[in-house]
Image (cartoon, rainbow, N blue to C red; front, side):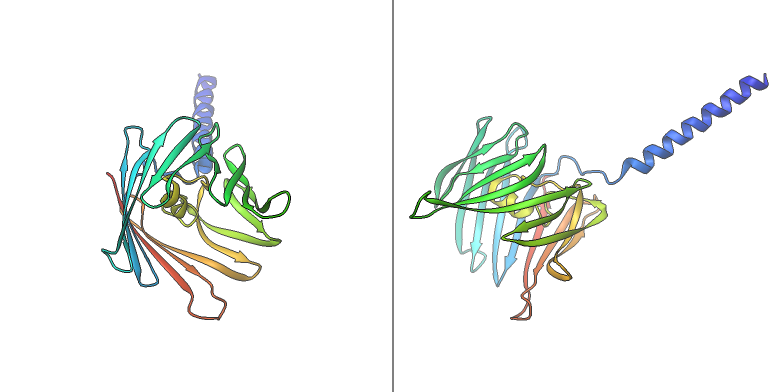
Length: 248
């Protein structure tokens, strides 16, 4: 009888240990099915209003853009078509171009005048090359940015011999409206960088390069993102404000 009771106690202790272990390793949880419906982007006295329409697979089908110097300045649009190994983007002013994706559905090449080329280790971007045409052999130049990762986040990157490090809010998940993803999303309807945690700044040694500030709604989604870039005393620091609304 005592043996049976001891077995029950040991079983309960094992279950508690497993539960505590799972809780300890759980970490931040991503916000699923996140679809941005509207973005208002304010910078240097101008505002751009973005509206996003999604297809039945939750891909961005089209982006309608209104703004410029005033709220009703210029208008533009981006229409997306998906074909498996690539998708096409058609715009009002730049015509159409194709964007290649890899087997993990991450952008591998954007073939514009300055072509973007991406290299990954699984889902982590390790190198981004900007391939630009020149007039002498081999008739192109490559400007590379190399990335290192740790714990699901970009820990540092090097561009033109200069190294930068990043800090994160470890209690918040990275998401579509954060400092690493939003501009990629506005350009391509997706992001090829997906960090686990929420980025808060970029540093060059002891000096800050960019700082990120966030506000959140009741569901933990970013409702406002502010990017401040350091002008190193040559003038006022450069600030861009993004306000978000979501497709519920």
